[in-house]
Image (cartoon, rainbow, N blue to C red):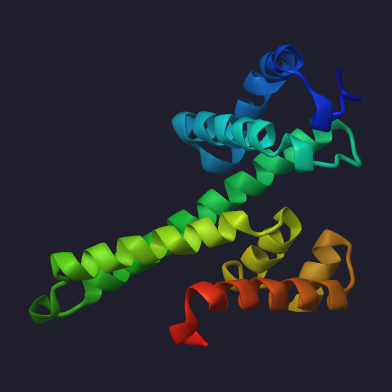
Length: 174
């Protein structure tokens, strides 16, 4: 089961893969999210994305390892999205009472956050991981390169790629 070719997997084999790893991956995700429901949602979403994009997936490691890396990255993305939302909510709480956020401001923020998250999720997995480590965890390029065992030039190229994509969605910040 671990040497499956995801590009040509049929629905029955995919269901077997799901049943074999679902509970195990949920347990793994809980270590990151500390929330059972969030973990289940993340694992389900990972399987959904794999099924949806299976014809484009080229697994160079074992399927099990690919699933674990995908779940870990999804957990890290959720944690970072939650941090952004928490930071913004704290910022709103600190604002003077006379500067209360209007429903329109809240709508714009939520729409912008949704677009940002969609763009972040649409980035290639490695690119997204590097961007998160840089922008949300505050790691320097050399630290990212060391942690991921890649070159600093690879980190720079991926950050540049991510920023270029973000600028197409948010040209006012160029």
